[in-house]
Length: 218
Image: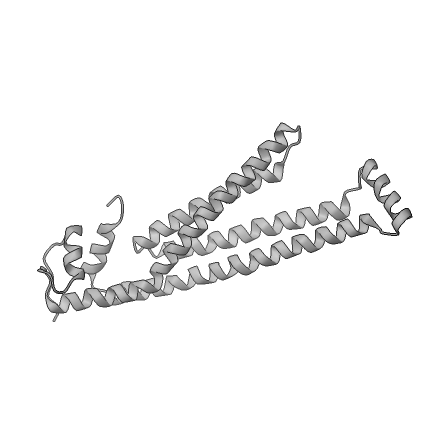
């Protein structure tokens, strides 16, 4: 029968991690703690991925904001630049929030992280579809049409067709790349949910309380 340990504080953790040091824990409790650490490694890796994604999305949001501001300074309204900036900022915040929840052993964390990836994929899909639609449905401005006509008459190259095909290929490639990477991330995050639930079911409550007490703000 497992003995209930005395109340612990974060200062007790180094002692619990070093079996050779003086510790308020019994040998059985030290073994439980070590086993819990090994099980936790299966979902702790997701916190590193969430941090990487959050930083990446934040950098992309800053770049998108810069492009939008340059366009505005040149007298053009870049609506999609604003949408992408806000969307990337929201995605970065969700990654940070989901990471904090995962560290706090909150089973909602993996779901938030997974759906955040799905939301990002949706935003990119709409953006790519819009750009492709613009290339095929929006008439060329007179200057570009005249330039393309001259190239076609002199070189036999249909630049208008080439532009549309290049636009289609580029945005399809962007969509496929994002779907592959973010899709795998979403699948990975969702799979951590079951692992976290198993961890909570198999780990003594005193270890769970100790891990939660160690998180920032606790």
